[in-house]
Length: 161
Image (cartoon, rainbow, N blue to C red; front, side, top):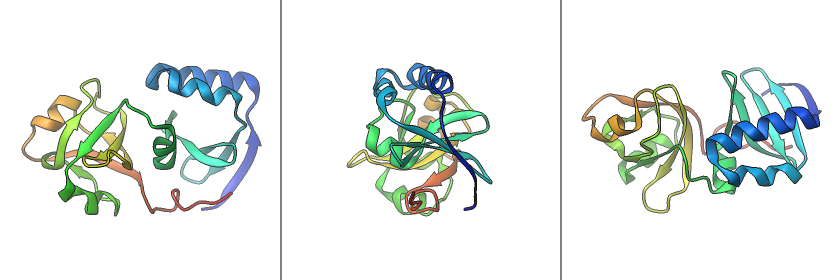
């Protein structure tokens, strides 16, 4: 991935970003206030480094945790849980099919960014875009539920700064 620019976030940009994150994920995100945030612009999206770690990224105008960010921050909202059979596919970047979904946050709306976790250890495997509402993901017998964006082991996961 080619870096186009890298700059520390100004206070007003940081405050606006934190306000958006807190409204989506709750007060867990408020702890980012005391961290150094840098924005890195790449070809596909922008990354937000939190104390040098790629914990957030901006895609389609929305700020969301990376897989590493979801893992480190222990987020509990916008979660979709997949069964053991789906882990291998999700970890390789496959889209998430509805039959593999065992649980989903009922507040998820179509088009929302979501965190895909596995059912045994509840660890994040991927970040994706919901193609259906949360309750519908659990009830559906077929079809794609989530379009995968980034996953454990991809270029973003392996980036070092």
